[in-house]
Length: 328
Ligand code: KG4
Ligand code: ZN
Image 1 (cartoon, rainbow, N blue to C red):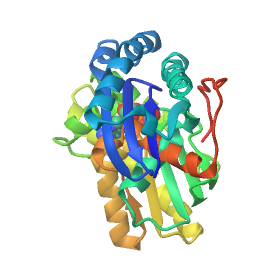
Image 2: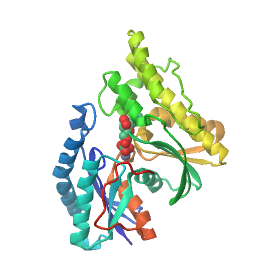
Image 3: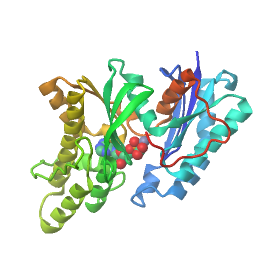
Image 4: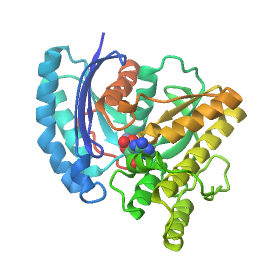
């Protein structure tokens, strides 16, 4: 039995969790800074770092008390070392190093995007490998062919804005709050996707492009000032969801794969989930989403990903540093 302590601080959530054997959540504590950054319309890295620093010790104390775990039973400390914002990452990494040193337990470096992926496998035991992974977060949009949890190949990615970033930027244009995804989704619920927005197709069949769509929405709002914001939000959301589902299904068909795993913040989107279900009804390729609570950043996924490294004997040392642009 191995108890992995996960630490996540790559963006605006400070999160700690203990997970047994990558399967059973013993306890988790998260402090979100979303409301603070909403005042600025996006994450301010220095403010985020300061809040991580303020929150992390209290969260750890609550975690250890609530789980009644003696540190001597912790098998390893897994921490996100990238991708993410340098300052915020360094808070979690420094904290993890101090704990690893004082408790004399191994340190594990976790790739944040593989964390998002593990959040799906943790709760859904029906996924068969190989599968196609659709990574959709605030900074990443990728289609990955995954043969095993440690062997994968990137088939395509966004050539400009990430899917989540396009939600955030369009929301800002429409005078909605941050983060944009949930805000657009909220008003889209009472809108009608009546407008046909362009679906740019980059040269490579598995790549994405969202910046042209964003610009189109910008000029559409300028030229059609009387349209209902709700309808524009619904049409934008519908377009992004259709593009994501379409490319992922194309990859699955080409590689004769039956399962598509969707990971990252945008996996919470209900239009994306509906489109995925409609597609399943048509072609039988099944989409797997994480539970809503675990779509956005959390330490449970970091501990679950850390467990994979633990089993493989992949440990980090105390020279571990942040890698803000770490690849999947
Ligand atoms: O994975 P995540 O929490 O952080 C990163 O690793 O980037 O993803 C955050 C992104 C933001 O761009 C946010 O607008 C988007 O995920 N997001 C959503 C929804 N919830 C979060 N996008 C669309 N619909 C949502 N419900
Ligand atoms: Zn994330």
